[in-house]
Length: 411
Length: 221
Image 1 (tube, helix red, strand yellow):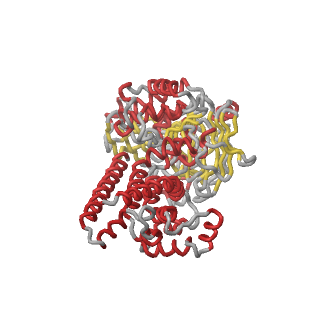
Image 2 (cartoon, each protein chain N blue to C red):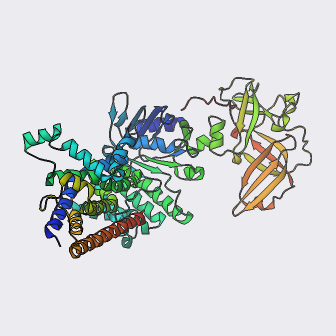
Image 3 (cartoon, each protein chain N blue to C red):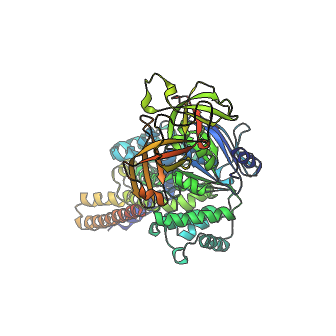
């Protein structure tokens, strides 16, 4: 399903999964929608206060938006147009709260049994025990109250309670924020197992991008209550819709430029003029490199653009003695898939298994590349080294430049 | 020791609890979770008996539901109930002046329940009454217990309002607090001593119990 963003969206719309559309101004602005097929995991990502939890509350039925529609597994849970709004009790949603919301006066077992009230008492307890075993909570902990359980154990109880509803949709609100790294790994595995065995959509609210990339099939990026973009994590990293999304998903190598239109003699490519940050006031844009990048035909020639380069589109090479710093990239008529530039290592921080490096580009004032390096080569890099970088132009993604207060309409 | 007065006081305290508990729970739950205009005024009205002089409260009850008032006349003519200088009048007065003692602790206890817990209950499929019975009341229980204890003891000890509304008719409206006053007036200090000590021990035990209960409430959070 990760093959193509568009195809994935189509699949999600057809499969009996989750479809959400929300529009409101008060009490906080929310706009946009997202979808997720059964068996898929969708990550709602965005900074704190972006409206992720509010979106989730709308889906669970804890708040009613001014207008919106929520369909899960073909059943309409909310449709303000027709006046349908099922209460949370009728939605069959499994919700794991950020701070778990376990009942402090009940044992782990009774907390889970609380979600099984429609069963006879004896059966209730045996089902509750089944779910606690399912999330691998040790039997000697079943009788304990939440206060004497660790964060990771409490979370397992909360997940068991959510599963006990046999939900048509599983919602997890920042479930990993309050547990230590050790328990987190175990919980990631638990979530991966659940994904395999549950044939329902799973929505994970998180502000942690690494977590979203690790766990999610799909991602919806939210900022200031708006869904800015959704798609597979790879697709969003490869082609963020705008500069804000690029910021939010943590793309570090973001540059300014000008779109100069289709490149003659190179079908499917267009010219991108690289305008270095330190070039303000420079009289002649032609002094800067022109890159033949993939042209999706969406940008008006002459308009200012923002462009991003993913880390894996940069290759480090030994400095070529003949390379002239003044003539980077291809000539005016020809084109190449790559461009080679001289670089100087400004900083190299060796951390654990990775190295964070900042490379200045002497040909482009005020411009540097930030790279996360792994593998044997990283150890040989030190501040002050001169080397060449080869940029894979197929990895370049060009977006309209950000105009403050003028974000494009939500997806 | 005036056993008649003691029994009357116990009867009054028990009857007050039985009538006031459901009213207090409903009012406290409403004030704790409801959001509506004029809430501050209702809360103020509930607390009023706490700060008003008992004689003022007693006076208004006397003229409000007494034989000379429209309400008092109507009650007497249609139901044959007389609310002054009678046990039912005492009970009404007792309910009014105990309102803050019942409502305030229960309201605080309801307010202390994180909303997340009732939301979790709703998502787990629990309806209003199930959530009330299985989540809210168990969590508010220490507060409810302490409110019940305070109400009971306060009824045993109330003097001013009872005297104003009930007079001091032995076997009908003479409570133990008024009996102590009467004994002292009659220079019967031996009797007054015993009854005073009984009330003192009872009050101390009750207040200590309510403190223990709130400590338990705090420990759970």
